[in-house]
Image 1 (cartoon, rainbow, N blue to C red):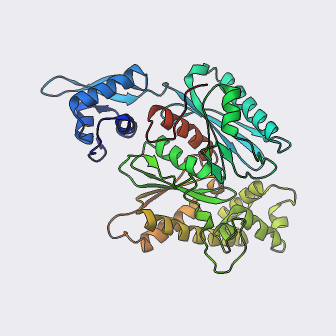
Image 2 (image 1 turned 180 degrees about the horizontal axis):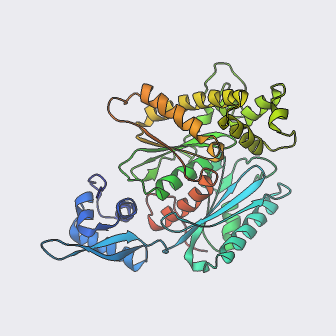
Image 3 (image 1 turned 90 degrees about the vertical axis):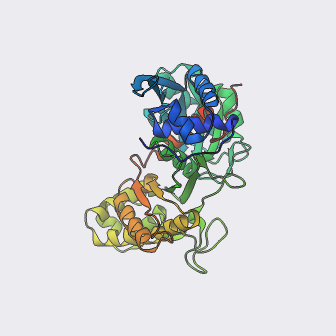
Length: 410
């Protein structure tokens, strides 16, 4: 069995997060192995594990490992300890996902967003979706650790609100977390979709905390997240990882962020769709209609590229080459050893992007002579942000110290 590197954590609040993270990524694991992996004393490990068992977060499997002394009971995360709810706010849709404590999806629902962007309509729509899904699954209210609402940001995590959202859903001036916590009676978090996807992939894949884990997220824009020692790197205001706003063309196209030549302006799905529509005959040949939303049109374009359409493939190849440059920046900046591609932008033609990014990192990553960078595609790219929102809630609830603070129920 592989366990994480030896830690020098002192006994305290952070030790619970450390133990939960080790059991999550390495379980089944014994108490003795936890002592060896953390450097904490046997009594400290025993006390933490006892509290985790009492809280229902961890359980003994019933299996034991034979030793010369007393048989060692094995520990795993209790998948039914709590459930997390994540809602991803898209340009015109809301995706709600419920996961168990180990990150397994137990429910999903996709609905249209509110017809207008009034703050009250957005909050009401989110609350209705939460109730419909949790009641439909028959989840007792006390079993839900909380809900996270995630979107493209920028976000004001401290106040629990989005500064802006795509499409007609722009709840400006509304502190969503406060409004929804009062309506639902559970803690509510607001965070960026890229950050959520990074935590969701890390949590659900049972990635070891010894990995330097990165997630490249593409939807309407391009973002990223990095998990270090089991915790998401957030920056000063939880708006770290905006890879799409790294300039790649000097004095290029003006971006809404205020810069010019940003990666998003050349590689994001909406840009490729616009170029496809501007290419004579391409949109008609692929049956991309003028009224089709950009996300749907990009799926058509990506599918054509996969099936050999030369013009569509040229657009995707150019996007993949630019995104590979972004992945190279991310890998060199953080010395990443594991990178996952997530988000609806990778749902159809993710293989094109994975292949190019793998090639670029193998040839040009600064530390390539020291270690490889593993590049994988999310197993569920479309729902990765919503799944990640649920993971944010669960991490903050069962492993406080590694995730966002999940406030007590009102």
